[in-house]
Image (cartoon, rainbow, N blue to C red; front, side, top):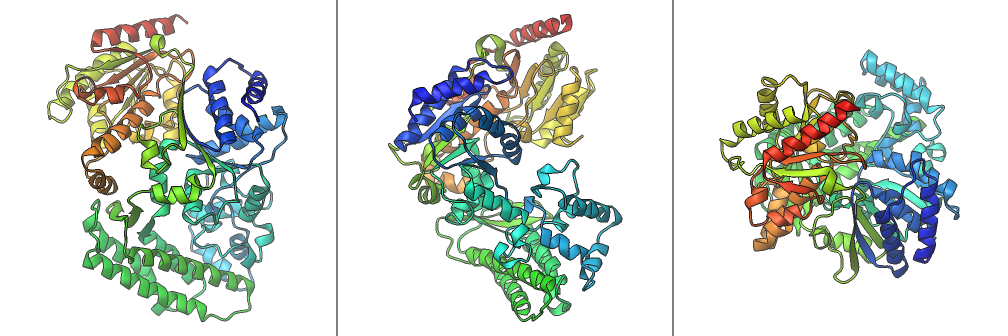
Amino acid sequence: MPSPQVVAALRAVTAALPAAEDRPGQVAMAEAVAEAIAAERHLIVQAGTGTGKTIGYLVPAILAGKRVVVATATKALQDQLAAKDLPFLQEHLPQPFGWAVLKGRSNYACRQRITELESKDTGQGTLEIEEFGATVRVEINRLTAWSRTTATGDRADLDWAPSDRAWQAVSVGSDECPGGNRCPQGGVCFAETARHAAAEADVIVVNLHLYGLDVGTRGAILPEHDVVVVDEAHQLEDVMSDTVGVQITGGRFTGLAAALRRILDDPAVVAPIAEAPHAVRDTLAPLLGQRLPVPLPTEVSDLLVDLRTRTQAALTALRAIDTTVAEAQQRVLRGQQLATRAIEALDVALGPLERSVPFVGGGPDFPRLEVAPLDVGPVLAEGVWRVRTAVLTSATIPTSLGSRIGMPDGGVDEVDVGSPFDYEHHGLLYCAMHLPDPRTPAFGPAMHDELVSLIEAADGRTLALFTSWKAMDAAAEAVRARLPHRILTQRDLPKQALVREFSTDEQTCLFATAGFFQGVDIPGRTLSLVVIDKIPFPRPDDPLLSARREQLGAEAFAQIDIPRASMLLAQATGRLIRTANDRGVVAVMDRRLGTAGYRWDIVKALPPMRRTRQRADAEAFLREITDQASKR
């Protein structure tokens, strides 16, 4: 559909919103998306906070009359699209369309698992239920009752939060499910129903992880589609690295051992699998955080061979089971599926590992062997860029995104539609140039003094973001002793509860780490000051990034470190102004933002706020905001 018609439809849609307002950036984005789809050219759109980018890409994508997959960074955004945006567009767009949300299998209750847990014929269901504690058994019973009334079986539709153990008892993952065609409940399976709905839909909403799995499996999960919109596209490279690669974890064998116990009473088969997680931990824990050489170290390759032998023995035992009981057959099939997937992953890790980076991630108690692609460009080129039109969008786009993910030269357009917010008058960027270098011991105490002064001027109302847990803890301890304001830290409550507590008390301060740099929305007077302790450069010893740095050589800092730091700093800065009326200060305690040769590469990625190096300017602006708030 031509851009003028798309813009007319967009204006009609936005006029129906409760708080209708003119958003030039949204119009520009819709025009660019419409033109990209019509010309079958890829598009990267940076759309600042407040643009209304979801409506900005959905309207032209729907009106193009092509099947569209929207890949979001989070399940929460999936749920927002399903509950709010798509129903609204169905009501107000002139062109009818169907839509569906599709998630990974483990997000849906499994009717077959529930049937087995309720079964009294073999007694196996009763035995399995008795393995759980009383509280988990109550939760399983609630989930079982819910499964009889829910239309979707989607965990997100629950009005309460079951424990992970209870949910795992009534669901299965993709590595375990034998598929709808091999399951007695396949005809009424919640996950299969969702897949069938997606196959008929014009717009399919998935999370980015599931889309990565689809690309990695050459389209085995999603139906054919003409256009993909990647929301929060700055996460694409990292998610693809996770989903296209493989992971060898102890948890994989814990799950397999549990599946074996449900169908086998043979310690000679079950015990080696049950003991495998200990072998994984003992071998990998000493190598935690390390990039591994290729060929793999002897102790690692020996571990993989041993795990494969154990798993093959379990698979052989499962294949030897002959039963006519339908529920037992399903337990066997799921065990076989888990064992087969484990063997496939082990075979990849034991393979030549060309163009791959093996390393040990996780934590001391649960280390994991990861094999990630050195470059995700080739798999994206084969699975996306050459076969469909892609629209990538985010509030912050790293400058090197296109080249990092292998987008074709000359085949992609880039546009920045800005933000409707008045950053010049409503925001102030303060760099504490007088502080010591953040890499020196003197930085911490001096930064704490600076933080106290700024919080006093803001009368609380502060979100302080730190690049490490250690720095957050030290700052909270120092500041609590010197200020009357309540100081919450990320250790105190779950994320959403923290945001709720912070939002309801204007004098409260919240100290957090990288998990709060993005995905946190705190509009209004509660937040007037965002403090960032250091420029958030990625770890120099990150195993995967270190391999990519070696590949790039002298260009690595400019191609990897600066874009990632710029993007994260911009995301953190974006926590401040969330509505047209928000005002405040972003204080960066890292003097390198004003002295380093690369400083303008980072500053240019930030919202266009006024800038100062004087703390007095920041304090004066904060006091002005505080005074105005107290008069309301």
